[in-house]
Length: 155
Image (cartoon, rainbow, N blue to C red; front, side):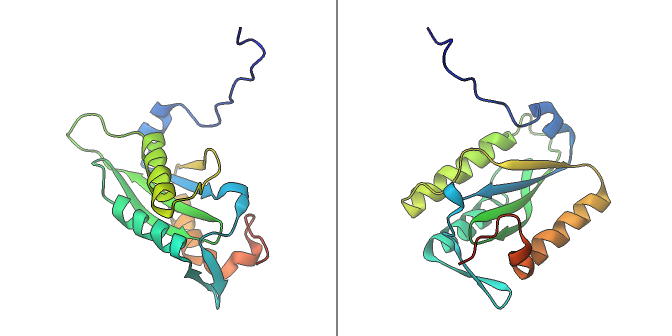
């Protein structure tokens, strides 16, 4: 009966890979790469009302769940970057990265009253301290280098 349906590809690593590592770099893009969150002027983002909602939600999610923490983030016109660190706790199982992203995307879409996000997200497991520092630098400099970004769309 379902043999003609395409199976959805699993593009993420097994959950235990994420649990073994201390940090994951996440990129979440808007649906159709629409610049919904604001515009870059003078190397910084001027947030739209929806962009402010997304920024506020990032701040609300920073320490929302024991064991996961958003340590660095940036809101761009059509995507966001998050560096999420796993913090070992004595409190048993923690929320999965996929659950965190799903809840975050759902809350932002509900608060903005619009379907904001493309399906899925991009992730990269951070394996070394040097790599983590380069990602932090990338996040901090992203607005200044917007025209060079692979997600750039002319406004």
